[in-house]
Image (cartoon, rainbow, N blue to C red; front, side, top):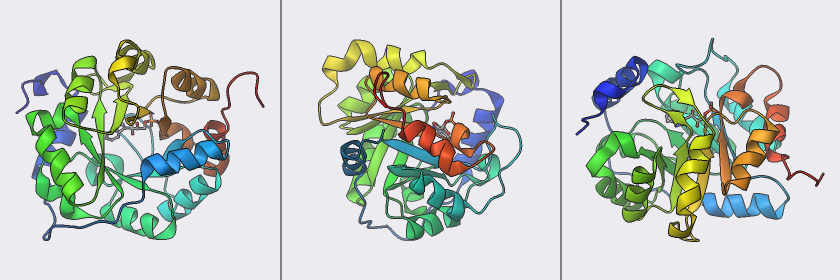
Length: 263
Ligand SMILES: O=P(O)(O)OC[C@@H](O)[C@@H](O)c1c[nH]c2ccccc12
């Protein structure tokens, strides 16, 4: 399925190998999902930048592990104005778990994205969430089938893309939530110009009812404004929120990143 495996950073290849081995769920799930677009609209109406704050204890590109109780971190993110949460469930490389996700989803009322590397339909059934992630590069030609399988179960699916070709494939498959990852999974390098260059020339092609999320590498309020100016409906922020200090005030840096000139 993946002719491009050899172009990936070793860490990413190891993540993908582990993902292919990961078991699925026993039974087909039927979820009653909280709407991500509605949560974004509610944040906007309240004067907040729509932010998906990510509970990511560690990652291949961060040093150390944040040991705090994930449920406590999640609550602080919501207090900081996060419109939604993203929770890593990948155990080996990100310190996540499906239990973390279930506990967090029970403790908050915002939509929760399951951040994992799903490659097979039965893996959708491992745990309930509101949104699942489908990474265009990893699922390849299975994207339309997995998108349909996710929606049949009641999930919303965030389709992650990194280039114009993948954006086109996501839209052709009928994705209504599209994330543009500023981190190149080949090299693990971040470039905020990615969102601009993928979305910019294609603004006309993206239907109004598609929600665009800028993912990765957003570390300052200025970065947040830059992504909003480039057309991001929402921002997915992990490391900068999980960094040292108060997760609540780290989250506020982004939810309060109003356009220049306004307070
Ligand atoms: O920590 P950052 O740079 O703010 O990035 C968050 C998020 O975009 C990143 O964790 C991510 C984007 N796509 C993924 C796929 C799997 C795991 C993690 C990710």
